Length: 61
Figure 1 (tube, rainbow, N blue to C red):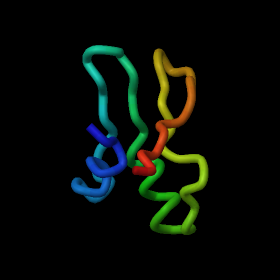
Figure 2: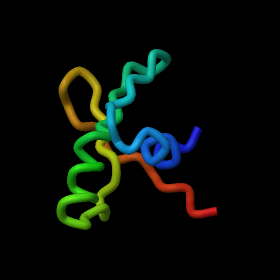
Figure 3: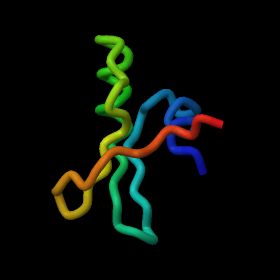
């Protein structure tokens, strides 16, 4: 699944919790930054147990 396609399909309305990894994809935060400020350079933040572990990669293909 491409998290960016999923985020757009739900209009950035909810974060995504991956039950297999325990990671939270902060889609709403990304959507606010993109819609309000046009900022999308860092991408969707990913956290585990309240700690940011990185940002989801965009599929460039």
